[in-house]
Length: 565
Image (cartoon, rainbow, N blue to C red):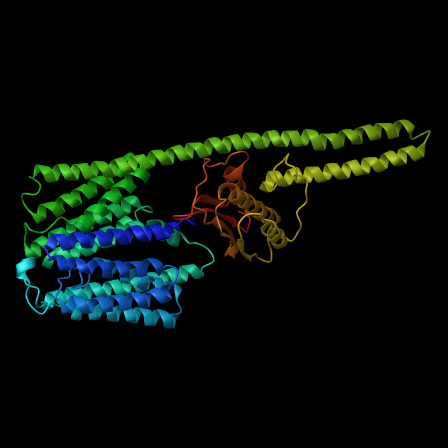
């Protein structure tokens, strides 16, 4: 049975959560049983979003058609639609439509993307108009639903416009990133942080639907805190201080404008963002600096809670919950900090072991190859001295052997010097005396063509002038990475190899889509593995990274300078 790709599983989990939230909203609203008929249509739109990952040009129009078709019976039978942010549109339909918009803008041609996006927007407008109840349902819901106020229309329009612009912008960003030949730091951050961003976005929509007139001001602070949490891994202290200030300032501003309101719920979006920032600070910063960032966030949330209700801080249950969440965030940060420290210790130990092994291998090479040839030269020279006077022909033969032995010794010595300079050949290995050709591109293509594992897609663009040591290092990195794919990712069905020049650096990236993870620690097992590659890159003054490539597979990346440091 073919396993489900990990990105599909993440999307399925997200859509499953929003379907569950819609079910809870239906139950909480006290709607009649017929409101449960809303779920099949919402699930159908969610399935369109799930399958749209592979074929967005097909499932986006299907999703729009499903949304329009389900609106007709909903409006005809006056079924109450529990909505979040946009009236008469369920949260599942809102999230699924946003996902489909991102997918079509990202992966479809411009004309197709425009048509599909227009169809989705039109279906959303049709749902808002057709599903509007024609009478009041106070018997079931406890409040009047018959007519939308201007504030409701403005709120729905603002959120709809925000989601449309955000989804189109996200699709365009992913479209541009897909065309890039290398992965930038920003795209790597987005790839790793998008689950947190999606969770904070859903919390923000729930907050907007429940906050009432205070929602715009409160959501502004929560949005700033969410952005800071998204970029938290890069600058933890700076983002923590900015988020704390945004939460406190917007809370005080809303209090001065509208007064304290005991019915205003806690900003769970800001709370979740603060918890993430506390965990990042504890994980990455020194203890004193982490304490500063954590204290600022605690102060910001205390101000936010205090302006909502004068009695919130006196409530022991609320205080205990906040302390528990704070302790949970700190514990998570310490856990990941301990894992990082353990991994770094493992890397240092593996590097030390690899260096010691390299020195021993070089010693064996000197003894077995160079010393052997030099000893032969000495013996032949002594023999030539003994027989030169009596038999010059024998002396000439000895000189020929001396010449051959000297050439072999010189070749071996050059190989050893090359391994010391760039590590492209392990001393003592079977191919340590082999000579690489001067055509690095041909060598790399030969390695890819002779690879016995999964199919390899090669993207190769080398500069005209490539230093010899860089060229041999690139060849070794590609060869070792493909070897690791064959060892540790036997179930992979796609391997991407990119060797491209970017400015004054050469970028190497080898990534597979294997669902497993290497079982051995960094440094590999039975050989130099990642440790050896890291050494070779650092000897040339470059940078090396290896680890999981997002949610599936493994990637190896290196940046080698094309000019001498």
